[in-house]
Length: 137
Image (cartoon, rainbow, N blue to C red; front, top):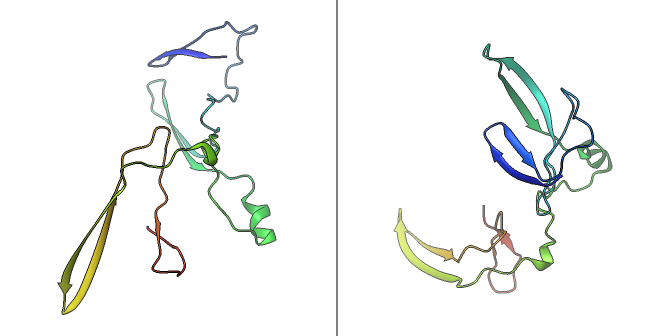
């Protein structure tokens, strides 16, 4: 169903359900631009006011298989937008400044750019001459 609006705990959908959803059933809200994230429930606490506090840890169902095969473990994407269609940042500006710290000259570079629509994170890397690319933490 398409979610029309959300107001507190009230979620309105555009088309009625053919059956009433079962109480205490598992469900997820999905979107065209985002993948469903999985969590494992760590604890549930009754707040004694008809509400509960639920604590969850991010869950990757494939991690054990990847560990067993020695595969590289990358974070699962939460965006389903293919990276090839994400536009590159514009107005990239790189500035530098030098300082002396305990008698050692240190050059610092600062990169800024305009935010990109639908971008949820940026991966910045640098390299000197033809050296290896280094990820910026």
